[in-house]
Image 1 (cartoon, helix red, strand yellow):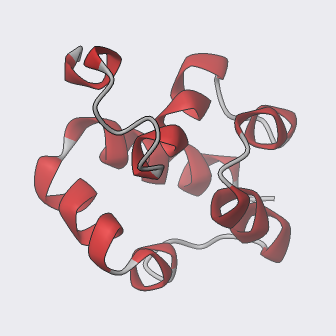
Image 2: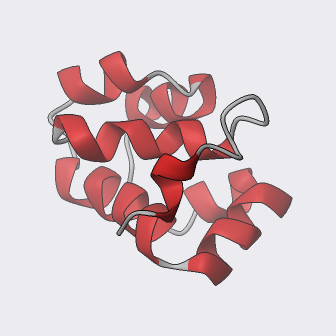
Length: 81
């Protein structure tokens, strides 16, 4: 399991606007830049914070996968760093 790489991807999604924009345009390409297991990739694709937490990611960081979901994209929470 590569919890560091999974956490790093979510941290980059949180803190790096250009990374976020790239993830919106090519999520599969972004996932490929990190050393992730198949299980981790599936959890990211599913956008499932609970599964990410089970894989060892900090609970607050897990939520940033929701930033890619159009339903949650405009939430003020994402502006908080």
